[in-house]
Structure formats: C-alpha cells, structure tokens
Image (cartoon, rainbow, N blue to C red; front, side, top):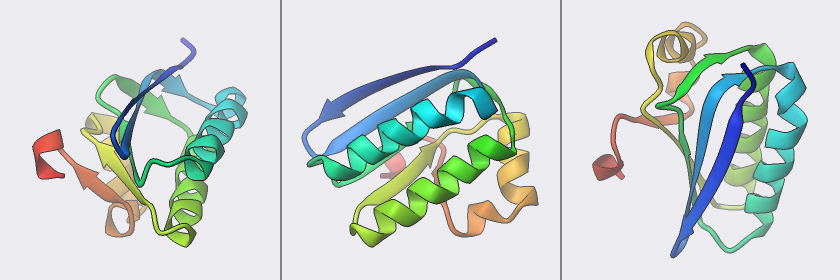
Length: 108
C-alpha cells in the first residue's frame, strides 16, 4: 500500500494527513511538501498520523529533516495521534524527546 498525503490550510496552520505506508519511494514527495510548507505563510504544520500504519527509517529521516528546517524558520512541527508501531518507533528512537507529539488537536 502506498501513502496518500493531503494538506488542508486554516489561518496559520497546515494539517498534513498521511494515510497508508510511508516508505523510501514516498520520501521525495513528502520532502517537497514540507519544503513548500516551510516557504509558505503557515507558522505551524500538524502531521496527522492517525491513518499511517507504517513508517520506515527513510520516513523518520524526513520527519527529522522537516523538524530541523522548521525550527530554523521559527515554525512549529507537530505530530498528531501516531498509532501503535509508529508511536513505539518514536519512543524507541527517543524522537518523542525532540518532536512534539500530541494525541488530539485540543492539545495545541
């Protein structure tokens, strides 16, 4: 299963919903979307992982790349509702220590 990426913008927040599996063949598309959002007017990008069922190391690498890029532009990158395996990956790699992870939009 490939991944689908949809972006909705509201005021200064963009919500990027990733559905399916985020693997190596998808990272170039995702990187370009992050770069475009980094150049845009949105101050906050929320990555909705509620329908993402798998991420490989390439996908995690893009998340770290995007986090660093956004940090340098004084923008915020937030990960929303990662499920099971992905939440475990964030914790196992200690990415949950540097990336902001929330369970619902009300935590913003």
